[in-house]
Image (cartoon, rainbow, N blue to C red; front, side, top):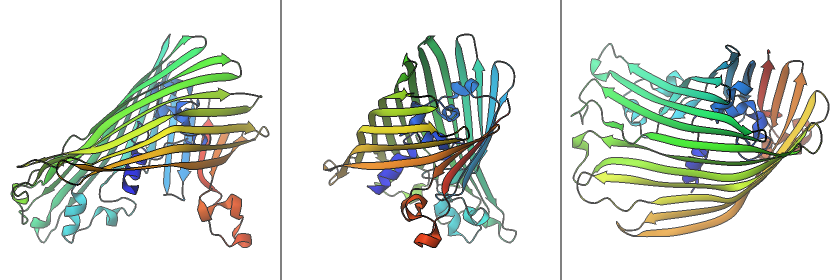
Amino acid sequence: MKIFKCLFVSSILFFAMANLKAGETRIQTLGYEANFYVQDDNNVWYFPSTLPNHRSLVIAESEYPYGELWSGGVHVPVNQNLTLAVYLMNNTQFVTYSDTKFRVPLYNNPIRTEIYPGMDTDEASHQFTVIGGLRMNNMDLGLQVTSFNSKLTYVDPNDTDNNFEDKLSTISAAGGISFKANEKTRFDGTIFYETSSFKHLEYANYTYGDTAQWKQPYGYSTYGVGARMFYVLNPKAILVPFLSYMSGGQGYQWLVKSLTTTGGISTHKDKQTLYALGIAADLIPYANNLVTLAAGLFNWTYTYETTLLSGTAPVPAKETWRALPFLSIGLESGITKWLDSRFSFYELLETWILEDPVTTTILDKGRLTGSSYSANFGLAFHVGRFDIDTLIDMDGAADFLHNGPYILSGKEYNGLFSKISIKYNFK
């Protein structure tokens, strides 16, 4: 169950790209999947056509307790209508089913984790994210491109039979459009595509050496769409219906015939589908106060597809996760001119359905229902042209709010803030 939940968490966003997206600290403290219904500069990761609304910014973000992640970017107004954003980060992307981890460590050669301890053997490192936004008379257009790439070559001066080359890569692209249908209605929409590749080449014939490449990618692509609409009911209330859909897979094809006996696997592909549908309300009861309310449905399914060299493959397993409904509440309140407080909490009424094959044609079926809860709390500091957003650590024994400093509680923690985002407006 936990394995499938990890798969879900990695793909819950229809942009299955960066784990850390610069400037997301505020959004994370305002509700469950708040990027769909709260206007913020972090929206550019979901809806690149919103970039013209967030010009002249330098953004840096750091997250420590759950991995030493950092990211940073700049939004440059090229001219009156064109905005260009460039982001760099130390994030990585898993390339599932690459044979790097199985082949590189087999021979006493340096591996990725020795050269770069922060990256696993089946991860590609982030190279760049570029986002462009163009403001036109009646609409805004946006384009986003992200690249992850890693290449490892090994040369043994004493034995060239040990030489190899290994490549991992992921590239994604998203295009979006935003427009105002009338004075009360604004629409944002996005389409998304991502593909990954892996290739490991040996320069010698090792044991099963009827080919230098053992596996190649198969069905390795993901596409998605997302949309939202802001409808102004009155000066203090905005309704935001939203939806998203994502479908994709990742798999491999065996190329080494001597490794595949009769009935062996020829191709294998994991397949995932995610859709979300919800409605939110952004309320402004008083000046400098924002209340977010959201409810909706998230549904995720996983299965796989296998073909054999001969014979019939067994009926595949299937996993389904559903949150129906999810309920979220968030609050942002200005305490002083230089300090804001934020908090949010949400509940997911979850259903897990697991179907496993007991024979080649029959599945058993398990069903689990329950609820999960989460809460976030943060502070924002405004100093001149700087905005500093923070997420306060509220995780278990590291929870500073409940445990207090070490000298009083004896509880160790990595710091008060688990995530910090710094923004500078140079307009």
